[in-house]
Amino acid sequence: MKKALSIAVVATAFALLTIAPAASDEPDLVTIDKRPMDRQNLLWELDLTIRTDGLVINSVDVNRGYCPSQEKIPMPVSVSFGQTGAFAHYMCDPIEVQVNTNKGAQTFTWDAYTQGGMSVAKNQDGSWFVTITNRLNSLKIKDVVFNRGNCPGASPIGTFEKRDPNGSLSFGQRAIYMMGCNPIQVDVTTNLGTETFTFDE
Image (spheres, rainbow, N blue to C red):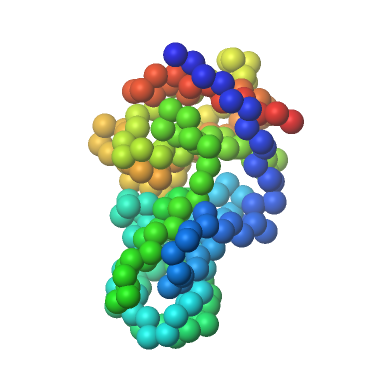
């Protein structure tokens, strides 16, 4: 069964954007911001700020372990209150980050509307780009149609995320498409069925 939702257009100035996670009632051990490092949102940076004394970070798991950092960061690492800066870079969009420390674990999530187990966003940098992000443990995309088939030349672009051998996306992994038209409707068929996403301009 198809469902339709109107989605706000993602801002085009991604390179200047810093995104904070959803708020939590728990006292912060650290706070995290994330920001894309390129216009196609392939590479992301995590920025950490330490909010307590005597903290030791034992590990940082991004997207439930499906997205390792590009840097080899020795763990555990002792950090001081107020210490802030870039922690690491990731070839994924970090939609869930768990920081494991000597004082417990803290999990950060970045909310987006989820329909059929996925979220869809678009941005423009000359060409238009549509990003489909899996928010389930596993999701297999079978077909994607833009503007009811009236968008010739739409094609997938490669990401650096390692997919399951059967082509399924693990949690947080993405399928990114580039096209010359403005995608105002995206129909995505997966192993769970077909979902329709529409964008208001």
